[in-house]
Length: 266
Image (tube, rainbow, N blue to C red; front, side, top):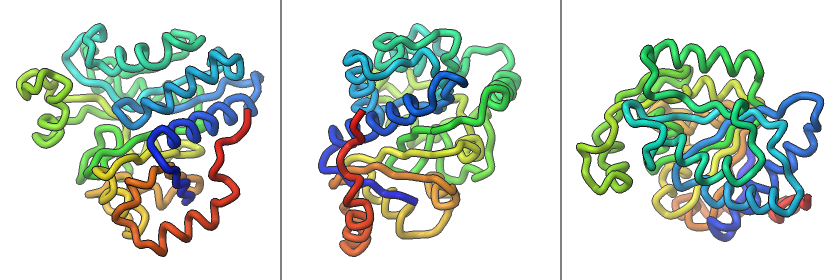
C-alpha cells in the first residue's frame, strides 16, 4: 500500500488530479477508460484540478466511462443535494464528459434491488474498473459502507445510521428530517474488484481513520481498512490527516515516496 503525503488538501487535489489525468491519457483511445468516482468534500479539490487540466487542453473525458459510488434514495436527481447534481455541477458539466458514459445509481428506481444488480452488471460488461477513487468519513467508511459492513459486499440498498443522518444534515438545512434515510451504494467488494484503488484523506477529522487503516489490521468496523488487502492500493493524504500516525510511520512513507511527491508532469 502506497501513502503519498502532501502539505495541504489543495496539494492532495493537485497530485491526485495529475495522477488520474496521466492514467487516462496513457490508456489511449483503443478502449474506454473505466473509472469509479466519489462525492462529498474529499474529491472537490481533485475535480477542480481535473477541470483545470481539461481547460488547459491536456485531458479529454470523451473516452472515459464513469461509475459513481452512491446516491440517495427518494430525492429527485434535480435536488441540489443529490449526487447526480453534485457530479454534474462539480465535474461532468465542466469537461467533455459523454452523458451516455456517465453511470450514477438511480435512487428513485421502482425496483431498487434490480437497480443495484443492474449496476453490477454494467460494471462487469465494460470493466474492470481501472481506478476507483474514494474518500472516507471520520469513522473510516467508504461510500455508504458504514462500520460493520461486509468487506465482500456488493452494490445494494443501505439504511443510513443516525450518525450519518446527523452528519449529512448540514447539507439539508441542519434538519435531520430532510435527510434521506436510505441510499444505494457500491459494496466494499465492488471497489476491491477494481485494478487500482486510490483513497483521499484530508484534515484532522480523518486522522483517526487514517491511523486505523495504516497502523492496525483489517476490520469491518473501519471499512476502508480493506485497502490493506488490495494489490494496488494508495492513500493520498495531507499533513493534518497524519496527526495520529507514529512519527516513524510518517517518516517511513515520506522516505520511500520522496521521488514521487511532486505531481506527475502532463
